[in-house]
Image (cartoon, rainbow, N blue to C red; front, top):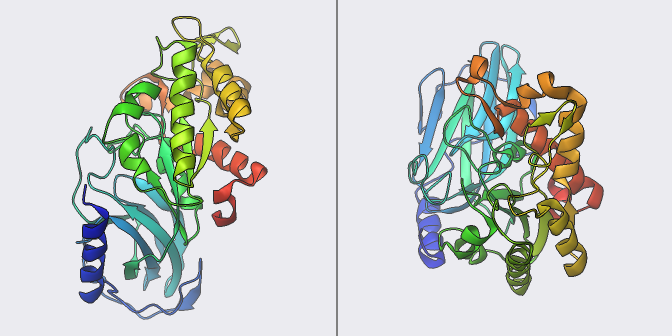
Length: 358
């Protein structure tokens, strides 16, 4: 990944090269006006989907888009490795709606170790939906945004290919401009492997600045980790984040869909192979270190058990719909539900990102 000086230099060059590709009438969260038909913005091509690419250095960028045009439209907006920015949005014929976001650009995009592909350098935007329409796109370097970092495994990460979806790539649509999500989660990582891999925790830590929240979720792959090692790994991350002025937040792992009758099994609730109740250890570390804890295990348990063995399958991957059966990883719908539980807790606890949620 480019170092900070090169990233800043690249951002200045990008600004000098007129990153603002189309003048917009408004830069607020949403604004409607009538519009004459317009050609696609510079950098964009296609009809369904419409794809846009901008040669940018890694960093954070304010992106404003005008969705709509001469015909009735239904448009979704995704950036980089399948990060949802705008859910399906309808626009009437002749109307345009304007939205703004702050987007984190990394290389490789998606998973930091390159699993599933490294993507294209720069910023990629895809407008999908039944009839996507975009009439303007503006991109400029963001000025001192709050960056929320995600440390975790495959249930969190920016999954590059459907149907697999991490909750981290679905919460982005809830974040207002002025804050961005930098998802450093990576498939297959335990608390120990994430901590020691230079592309993961050390890379994340190097970018954390004062007041940036760092959400830390592990457990799925700590199948043989002892209680003491698990606690030590989490405590090390907390200590290092605090030393940079960041705000660590622990997240207990979401449940697996493994039922015994109408109740989830101990394996589903992350009691690991050596008998360690991993969510309980996360809560204990949170108490000991005075760190906020989002109890996603408890919240997802309540959700999955309320749906029951049959209906809860829609949260995960089903052969009939997704071509694979997987009771650990989420469908797009399931990831959105899990992300919603995380956002609910962020609001309830008034965590640093709360002030930037839509």
